[in-house]
Image (cartoon, rainbow, N blue to C red; front, side, top):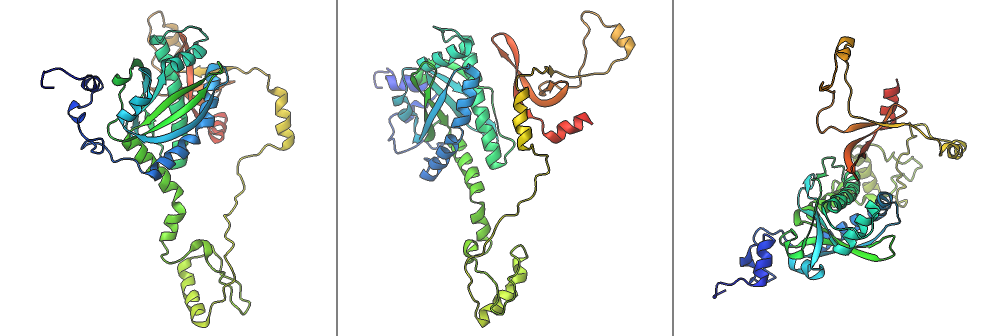
Length: 383
């Protein structure tokens, strides 16, 4: 840069908000603020998690487009910004959907222009679509559904109910301008087969903090049995011997206090404990408290599948005196019992079944279901 001119790499870096002083550094020397490269264990956990959401993602996109859509993969690989830029086409549709709670950090999806147009065309039932503001809104809605499925799965697997993301924002930009995380991040590459018969490719980017936090949370849940064993050092819970005595005394119940069994075990040790093989430990099966449909009932429900039911969306309610109602006219403002931003109620035959948020689809109002009301809550509504 002795002549004062900027190289193309430096121009691309400035457009993407990357420090150009790092361009000449060794690839093996990450920036001071960058997270360490993802481990192989982290990659495997993220791969397993995302693979488990593929069927739900395919079903969601099929319902949204009204056409067959199938996700394949993904293939999860640790990458840097330069690694991913080499794979991307010159122009991409980048959709930012950062997590803002639960596992806060950078999260985005990247589509080629052809893939973005194919999805938007199916959504809008329109051919030769342009990637304008309306198309960007549609793609943002698609990503919102994809992220929603992931959040649902994460909540079920980790028990973290605070996970949420920002509203996705889509833009069609040169790849150098796409906002990508610094350092090493996890990139999932999917194959998407749409109704046009073509195989499209898209990329999901999980920032370093997001992927490591998710992997840690999933790993801690799956490692619960290992944690339990660590409470009894030197004892293999899976191969605990039967504590039955040679004189025909029954073995102590496994559900009892282990500390109370300690004395007996010590006594057995002095007299010679007779190993009787591994204990047969089984989880207790409790009866379901909710009524279950009999096979006859499940078969008969098919007879009413084509019956129409009235579905309404209720923004809120209020109570007014008759004189207040008679005094209403044009311009009267009615205050409801719901706060701004609260979910609306979805009712079937005037019974609350779900809650959702209002969305706009092709200039029409719609509702995205965010919560299904439990049977117990529905019973409470009817009482």
